[in-house]
Structures are given as C-alpha cells and as structure tokens.
Image (cartoon, rainbow, N blue to C red; front, side, top):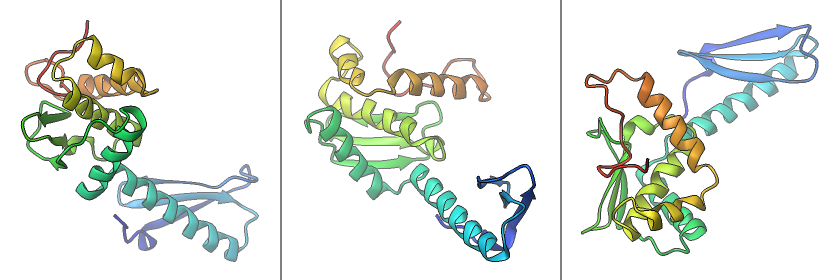
Length: 184
C-alpha cells in the first residue's frame, strides 16, 4: 500500500543525532529525523530508504487476502505440522465483536479488518488461533497446547485485551477471537 508520501515528508535535522535515522507517520505527513551533518545527497538517500521501509512495514500489517492464505499455510506448516488446511482466508469488515472466526464445515477463516495495521505477530496469533480451530473446535486443553507452540501467544492475547479495553465498547464485554470462551 504505497503512499504518495514524497509530497508530505518533513525532514528534521538534529545536531544531537549522530548516526541514526528514524521515520514515522504523523497523520498524512511522514517525519524523517536525520543527523544535521548529512549532505543533501545523504538526505535524499535516507528519505527514500525510510519511505520504502515504512511502506513495507505498512504492507505487512495490511496483507491482502491472497497473502493471508499464504501466511496461513506458513503458520500451519511451522506450528501445526501442516495439518490445518483452510479452504479460504480473508478479511471481513462485519466482525465488530470478534478478531477472527472460522467455519469448520467448509474450512473458511475470516479475520476482522480491525486487525489491519496491528503488529504482524498479533495478526499471526489470530490467524493461528483460527487454524487451531480447524483441528480442535473448542477451547479445551488440546486446543491451547497447539497455541503454546507460538512464542508470542500470551503477548498477543495481552495486546488484543488492551485494544479491547481501550475501544469504545457499548456493553462493556471484551472482544473475542471467536465465539468460544477463553480459558480462565
């Protein structure tokens, strides 16, 4: 998802910054911080590099449906011995109370578009959670054993709980990965 970010780039030179370059998005503007000693050529080079890095990072946080299918295959192979084989994986805009869901009868997986822009490891966790449901329908011990193999399970769950807590929930109940319950 490349932006036309060249027109909205602000370069900040700093005498305190000696060797590092950083960049971030601030609304429609991209801010690139560079050492004050950089030449104009170095500035152009680093602005181009940092814009490419930000675009790549944003693309990874908003994968296409085809990229989700490929990522599901990779996660299944790595963490589930390739046993979970979804028939489809896609983004779904109508999941306002769930992060993800799957239909066991047809093997389809849907991830909430609210996940777009979240860290890749969080999206991977939700996708892996749904893949695990293709092998175990409920949230019993066998299901959670499958997710223990993913090293960021606890961190991702905490991240999603934090997002749910800060979101404007009208009834005060937390968002779910799917319709099942989570362990106590």
